[in-house]
Length: 342
Image (cartoon, rainbow, N blue to C red; front, side):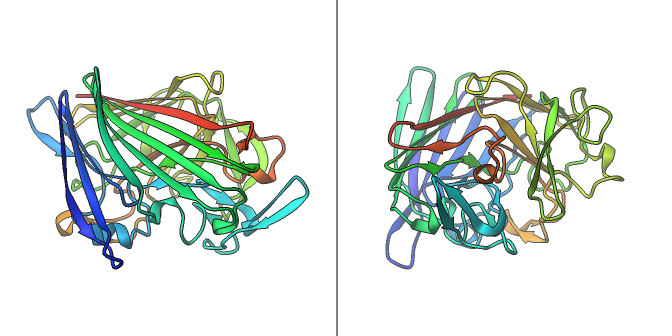
């Protein structure tokens, strides 16, 4: 196991941004403490070739202007909140409307745009970076003083371990995730249509044309949302312009259980995802619009996919959704594992 640390860049206020590289087993994962973001992931394949399978940027400046949220940790609340507002215990909280009239990924300055404290450490089976940050009461419109601790690690079993924890001194919805965009053929290899997917989900969250939940949770059977058996990403793109939908993970919430499996036949690479979270947002990069990525590579529509394990979008406005309200007597803690094969 190896852990390397170097300066990734310097912010306008003079603060240094770090880049951490973990080399464990057959994988090499790099992360930065700006946005607690994954910047690259080198994975071998059966042909003996090692590719970076994460969309991202070569330098810090890209992450400072990261409209698609490539690789970042999202919080306090990932995904959308209708009308950029929610009511909790009789009080209405107004948020940033940064996605039309709605709030997306916590507004104009969510956790993805913050410099986190970071430290590296090793355990018997892997190497880790522990990111920590504090968000004061009222930041972005959210109540309570919150402390978040997010650890990302690489194990000898070729797994990425993602552990999300938060403490808040007043009731507040909390929904943390990572927004990594994968292309298992390689981040510079074009679209993701060669990928095949299994989702361990019997139902999904219905949304309107603004991607806001209607409140209904529908069965996937006999619909374009049925990935219970393995099929290609693009098998239903004639009916949909791509996926940006929340799928309910089968099994007991809070228990680490199978969530998704992705296969890419040209490289032979695969990911199996396990999570304690109630749901996963499957997104096929529909809004990638000629993003200038690593080494000047242009990421167009459907150049990467996301499997964002999380709570349901707009949860604070739906009593029938699993609660994500943390508070003084109820800490937030979720875990996701990405297991890679090749």
